[in-house]
Length: 190
Length: 275
Image (tube, rainbow over all chains, first blue to last red; front, top):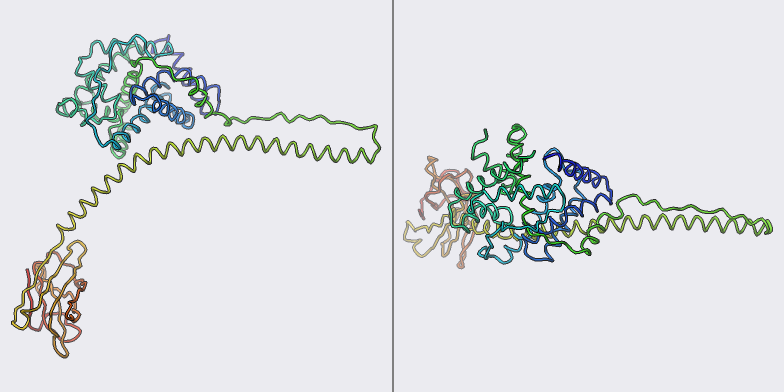
């Protein structure tokens, strides 16, 4: 990260350390920094406000209980929280999918429409968003669709291949190329 | 340089596509490969950044309050139990002593009460946390149950198919006219190394004689002894049997008439055979 966002990253890691020690104010501050981004993502994934609230609650419950397991040398606190939320949302979506016993639902493939009203709420998140947006502008549409399906839905790579009516190898290659491109941009300022 | 299959594996790991066993294997690989670990960390960071591309939606203030209660009660709330000492010098010594006793009793009760309240609040908070964990686990359990039920059904189906595939059903034919009216069927389970024999209208073998069942297995020079059979009544007899040696391939079954109690190696006439 560049010097501008480094203090943010450090602060968020410290907040998690304090949360691990049971500090309520740190938990509240972390909530204020992450909740909009996480809730927006939960809503995008489960497409239901009540369920998105449940997912957010489960995520913060996990953060409160498991903050000590966070490793600041491996990822940013926001990344850690996003991955927890994604996992919780996918659990729900898979239960829903099994209960409905169907996978042939209509999926909106327009994952990365130009969004100015980003869910980023800190300078670090705004900077990241700008980088992601720059990367997405250069990533071909078919790769963006594959990435969106892989990240925002509960679909496995095989299911994505079926959804896009493409061979599994093609889908894997699209996800790989797209995410490696994204990685170049996200890492750029590091 | 990390090759494409390894990159795919790293992506699958980051996206939670690997099975628990595959993930453990990959984590082991990562521990021995710093470049691979770095790739995974970078991919995780850049993938998570996609969350910021979603249009902004604020969660409700009520939700904030609800979530922040998760943290309540965890910190050691130290109640201020400062008390004042009251002196009652104008009372008579006896009354003073009584008042002092009452004050001490009250003070003791008050402190006990305060401590109990604090403990109660902590217990309540812990109980709430546990309830939340329980709810979360219940949800995960429900998800697992759905999967498990489906898998169990598949396993049962496969077992059924597998069991049937491994069963050998053989009708034995009489080799002597006397036995033409009798019916004998053998069901052999190769996996369990045991079988069931159904016999109908089998005449009595004669005094001092028994029917004995044999399994023909090419692995052995002589038929494998499957035991003496009970005497059938008119309704027939159903009997389970187990050979005295492991059977690799039960190509045929035979029944002979032997002396009472059976023999280790067939000697008497073969009255039934079936392949």
